[in-house]
Image (tube, rainbow, N blue to C red):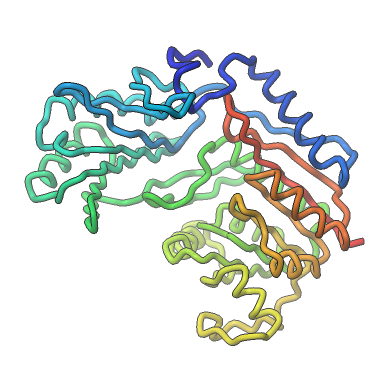
Length: 370
């Protein structure tokens, strides 16, 4: 990938290193980090070298009477006005500059606009969220509705305590894993994997791991909208999955219906609450009608936030035969492995390059009981 903003924009910090060398460096670094627990070969999954991001967020920078997209500069001292962004998907790229042109020629759309967010799919769907420091009235709604037609995109307007959906607040993605296509609704301002191609590889790796090492029923913590849950459910008789976000649970249930999946029970609980429920420390109304004792959980998948697992959750998952751990922060993964390897051994690790041209690494580890 070549970008005129390399060396200025803070989004791509490894701009001066060939992509193959970036991968080699990341694999070496991950190998060093997990060396106390795993000596085998680390699988790695590369990204496309450009047009790989399905999500993007930009600050709107104003100069004179014009507005521009801007990103934090590489020294984090200011912002860089953008004239191109080769990392975003084709669906975003072909509309974002047209949007900027329209906004600059339209006072209604431009007034007090301070940010724009894009959410796209591999099938060319696009959702645009426009962020304002003013109340959005009927005039804005009329103009924004016209904008949807002009850009062949969906538009959502947001300001303080206000959200306006012009048509739909989601895009529909199709994920190819193995010989099957899975359908997902990705909602505006909800978490979705940013790199669709690498996400497919992550799901495939998790499914292969479950096929080889999985047993019993599956439990998933931090399930989100069912990104891993739904494909993995095809390998298990029963699945129970937890997620704290009400919005994500709504999407997960919709995604189950879209994929004809009926063997997953989603419950809106934090991992800490689910731990208390399994240990019968508390009763939860949200588990009404769910008999946890009827599940024979042998495999657990966790995909925690950057902070990793808390003490109680580490203790919980250590009781199961197989752990599939997806990590967006290898440092907390390593911290958690220090405890988990007291009861389990690591049999497989992987690097997923969700964010090329950055130092960021996503990793996976499979552990089986000693």
